[in-house]
Length: 266
Image (cartoon, rainbow, N blue to C red; front, side, top):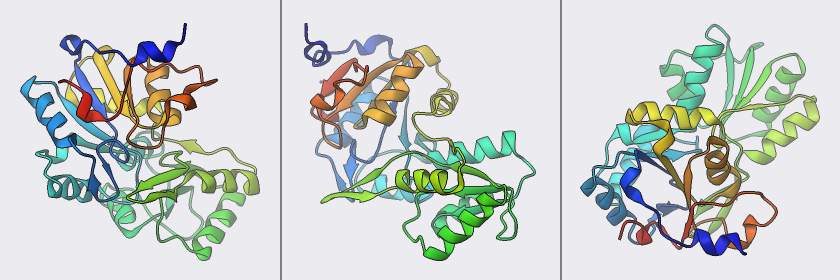
């Protein structure tokens, strides 16, 4: 029996405690909303199902994503947004509260971690923090390499290889993680999806039972992998990166597969 034909079926939403929704490739691509995505959010509200947007993209802060979503017509608030940067800040403050950090990221990224109380330095840091840096330079790469070789811990906000745009995909953080791991002979600590920390933080943010969560996303190795590892239900949408045939040999069987979020809760 082909398991993927089962995944095409419907889901019982009556016992869903909360929904985690990926952004890039799931509700928008670049600056274009995926048709019907705002209608799906309104249907969640009508059913009083809590939700958070969960993104690995660490190039901007939560305010940026709020403005982006509301600008597209989504009626949401700042509490509906959880980013890999948010999770990484929580991780650093909890497990490495006194360590200094050299951030490789955009100015918005640097400002957000600084405002959270993390000590930033470009002189012998304890941690090299790698974000999705659309302003990356050779100087940043070289500095990070030398700091890691001198003993700094390598932390990355998420593992994504590609970032969706309106016309295709841009190179994301994943290749840089592997570059630093290979060149400096270290293993990075990666915080974003599929790290279980994101699921726990989402449940806490929505104040709902962990077991009743559903993850909706377009990536197998982050969104679907996290749901599988967490033992929760999942919906894989085909509006972004993943295709049904990509599931072969992954060991992952989403609860449901849909063309887009517009197909859900109808």
